[in-house]
Length: 224
Image (cartoon, rainbow, N blue to C red; front, side):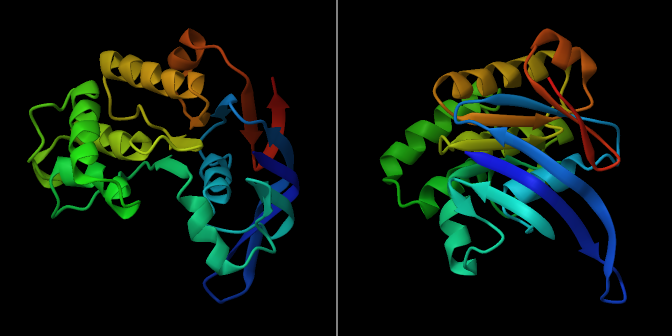
């Protein structure tokens, strides 16, 4: 499903020149249906790896393949079709402040052309699952940080993505909600979704053992 082969990444600098390399010679494969932790200290490169996986950026060198497509050489017009198969939980939520919690979660289904009756049933059930069954009409500015995080998570999984990427998804959640979230991710994984979770939460990792990709200073130091 995802393959990194000697992937390196540089970001542009303020002067328009390429900056220093932030990812170095990454090589690993994610088979369909895998669950992986993405671990490492702050600044190790976890968010950059996720950005490559959800096709926000392209590698500076090496080969990145997602859904059997070479991302480095793929036409720009081919990327939106691939992105529709990927769910992403962002650290900064990226909710639309003028839409209700319900409409934020429903957005991916509406963009996919799902019938409104199905959308209402699916979104209602998902909001109930994440503990926001009474917040349908509430807009993001009126929600707490943890509640916004749960809306963002619900939106990322509502379409049953083939690949789910989560960047510190439990950072604003208490232990009970974090555990509930992990049960949701594990159920999606059981149903066939490939899941990658970047986290600093060592206790969560210990409670849910799985293969981990370990990064340090932009290099893959372990794959266990």
